[in-house]
Length: 316
Image (cartoon, rainbow, N blue to C red; front, side, top):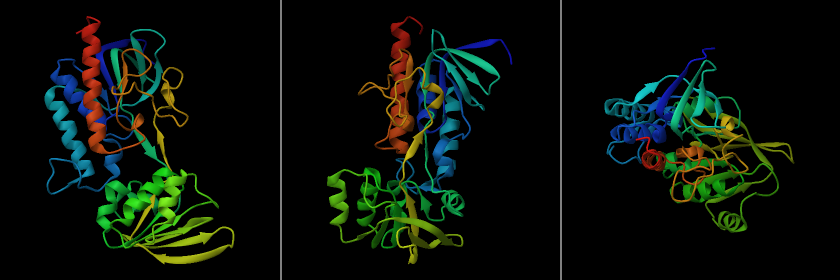
């Protein structure tokens, strides 16, 4: 391990829409940001196929292509974009320090955390393949539901997000098969009532996906009733997995305030964390919207917040 510590003005951790947008704005403000891309350069959008709902792409765009566009724009503005991921942090004193690849330390006057969140999956055969190839498995109904207008789909989950997505899908799909893994939902009563009153949503209790049937695309699922130990074959065009996301925030836990799940808590209306000079943007602090456009917006906010902080401190 090298004992030499590199000093930078602004360090951005993560490279989804939030991180790259923060890099664009920080570069234009002459903050000379250094961005480390992490284990998945481009974030969750690199495992997404077509993106139809991001402004500026009237014909739609493939998720990986959009992230390349973001990266190229950040580079053109002057951002120093590097391969590598943060393995440890020391925020006990200023300047704050971040370890990269368990090899070197970076010290920074301001840090923007844009490490995102990872969808939780069921862990069944073909799920990952179909999710990464646009084959009909998705962790975001708002992102991908429109591709299945007029078709039957399935969704797995029992919380508020699952209920919201089931209702959302019912507005465009002919039928929604909702699988709840126990005898009751975790969602709020108002959301449960909304689902149960919707005649386009069929709820299966004590249910899990036993198997996905698919070639290149999903054609059906086999639903297992765990109580009766029976199997039901249901033709569907898509399977949405809504069992939660895990924020990629573990390395910050000793220093940064988070909620019970691990989402970083920011001061309302800002990207400020409990530590002065440390900002958080994108899905690592947003459990409500989780869209590329909202992540990009919060990346812009983080860069502006960092610029103002550095100016106030006489560091810019």
